[in-house]
Amino acid sequence: MAMKRLVAAVTAAGLLTLGVAGTAGALEGDGTPNGSGGATTEQHRHHPRRAVLRIAAGAAAETIGVSLDELRDAVRSGQSAAALAESKGVDPDAVEQAVAAALTDAVDQAVADGRIADARAAKIRERIPGVAERLVNGVPKRFQDGGAAQT
Image (cartoon, rainbow, N blue to C red; front, side, top):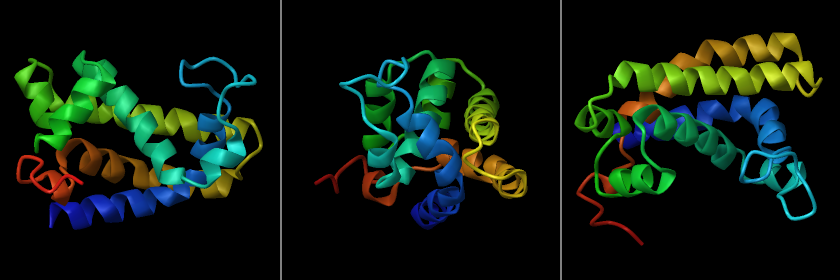
């Protein structure tokens, strides 16, 4: 059930796609403006959910005080970002707020860059708290048994 909610959240986050994919595409992996070696905006539009997840994972990892690899390994072993945060002495609500803020900032930047309209951004912003809650507290179904279903 948690995976269905997570999938629904990420699908709903598809609305974030227009705003976030462009933002994610404008940056290289190190957060610098896109240069010759970085991914283009067009490449990210093919995988908009990944852009949303990258932004959320980056905010969660930074707030928890772990690397992206540590966060990924924890989720793959069946641990939610909230559980990882608690194990590191970080309030899971702070992680959720950080994820929501990062996604909101991405939408705001997309509006400022003229990639999405204010009305669409308002609809996206309404969904962000729920998306953040599901991303922080959920564990994909394939990882719920301690990663036994990894492919």
